[in-house]
Length: 266
Image (cartoon, rainbow, N blue to C red; front, top):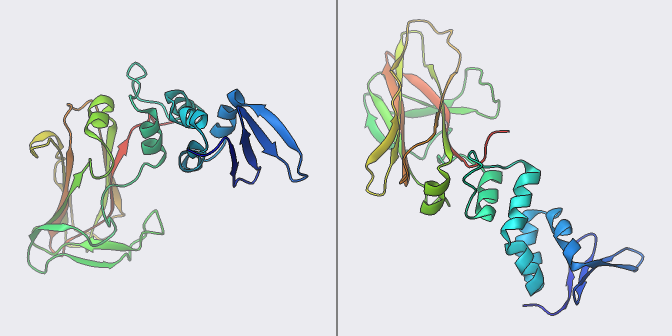
């Protein structure tokens, strides 16, 4: 623990003396603020600074930063609320960070980094994206051959920061998205399969849409398929994502994503 007189390196200049927080102005003047008001100041500082710096100043600040009230208020002011208001998070700080830094759990979704399930004929390949894509930062895609080609990833939720308790208590929505288009004008098919698995890697939920067939023609745009798992059983520990297809000359896929969504959509 630091002493009761600690200087923090913030632009506004914060200094703690006893149970008073001082705002140090550029002129060198100091304005005392009761410790009870410190919470409001902490709420207006970036969350990572509050955890990494402010929490270490003294015991009183540590208690403020560690309190559920602090993180519940951060969630309220930034619009992060659980889907079921009658089931608040047991750990508001974890809920805040997982909501604020929601991300794609698939590795290298725009090319490379996958386990190959089936790799027929000319096998999987990657290429520059020659067909107009809604997001111009997506410049590469995977390409199947004319025989069955499937690739997969297994997402370990605990390794990604989602504890068993969090998944079972909150059961956050799980959002799936994938983009696909035929490779040429000779016809092709696309398939997607996503499974929610328990600790023994047994399926406790799945999404297996019908095969999508493309007739002959090369004027098809990029198509997006999305699905959200809701109200699934407790016990989800892994997510198994598989996609691919086949055709006379194959199918393109890119920008795949799997996201855990703890907070209700705003």
